[in-house]
Length: 118
Length: 106
Image 1 (spheres, each protein chain N blue to C red):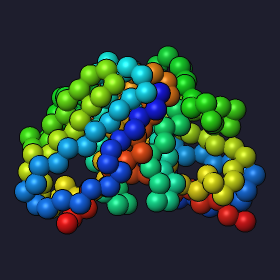
Image 2 (cartoon, helix red, strand yellow; image 1 turned 30 degrees about the horizontal axis):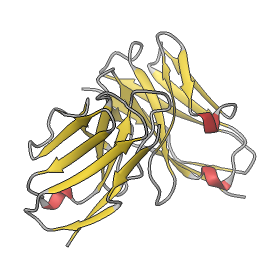
Image 3 (tube, rainbow over the protein chains, first blue to last red; image 1 turned 45 degrees about the vertical axis):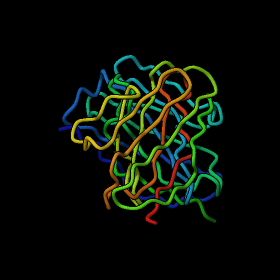
Image 4 (tube, chains in turn cyan, red; image 1 turned 180 degrees about the horizontal axis):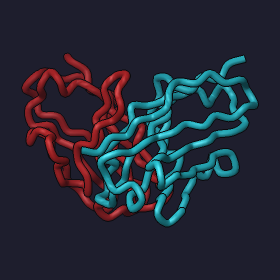
């Protein structure tokens, strides 16, 4: 049974960075890909990017290129998403989700609320 | 690739048959997924590959389509189905989502 467990809520100042973790268990972490999706309050879902831990391949949404970094530690089956130069518009719940190649994100983390406030 | 869902919101009654559509701005073969999201929860995969039911999802949910036009159908609405539904394309980076369809109780 696949589980993705994310790190806890964060409160950040404008201009700072945040790093969210996503620890996987029960699956094939290295060969799967992990996508990151965010949801601003009352808004829809937005795909930020993905990483394939085994290959080190990363793809980022164009709007976030240069500001978002995806990494993974295969030894601990943990993926990370770091977002820099935070503004209030980055206040959102950030989700990680697994993609095993069947054209759907089948397992999701519980979400991490990031609040950006001065 | 942009995905346009319609309607944006929908009021229906328990037992109704409901259809939500998702139109892609260019062809995406069958690389489309549907998700259900309830308030405060992570999205849940319902349909992948446009028409394959995810394990554990009730058979009243079905998906169809290929290319640019897709549908999600709920054959007989149950109380637990009132939620927001999203489509997502996984054909081309970025893996964009539709804007969502909120299904409310009439």
